[in-house]
Image (cartoon, rainbow, N blue to C red; front, side, top):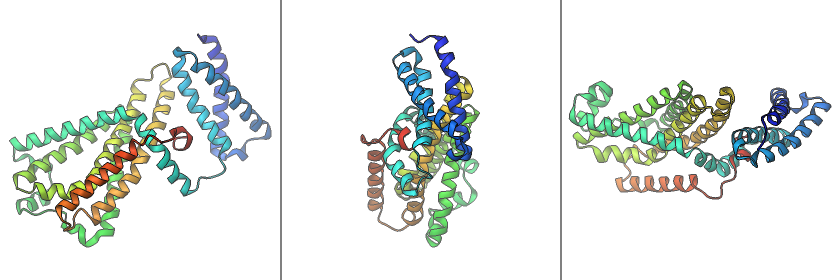
Length: 323
């Protein structure tokens, strides 16, 4: 078993490596002197040995995980060849993001349960209280539903503008849901629950007006991407809240930083998914495309998303995506 004295002694070198990395992050490796560059390489090798020792001791798992993050950062700083090209970012997303998602599967499942539970509650309340829609939905939306019309036909005439607005709005919701995790999870839970509740109320209101097919044939093509992305953003917020509320053996500041790096990686991967969803919502969902074709497209997109997220060939996220 590794002693506390050994950890206290080695922690000085860990902090020194972190200082050098912070300096390199601010001004690049060129800002380090020749001696500091040699020291950086030496510390990287020595701390790699420290990590191997910590991994051999089950009671030091928390320190080992923290040190692994530090070494991943050092590896990126030492071996990175300048700024990443756009193609490198795309390659990292395709290859590494599924592993990021699976590493955060638990908070994403909690987010999904909150979303579905709120949706069911919203639908049930709207079924027993038809006037609830006036408290939740806009007057314009209620008016169009009362006329048995969809409120989405105006999108068709301004597809490019609508697509941009939809993407911006969805990304704003996702990033806000994630950032609200810093409130200890209360803000994130509210955002997830509110969106689920709203969909439940809209669904039941449209069902009462005999418009279920019209509604879900509109929602399905883009919703199979948009809703999972919002749920994953909620999972990122909950991961951040977990680091804040349950630091374990780590100092709270270090726990939040570690959880935050994982949460940021998770929420950033949602953004390309929301871009695709925004394009579909503007150019496909509100059109007169046959209902069976819309549901077929939705099924295909969902299968592709699931196959991607659970792809067994994904690399370690620290290799390309997080570091």
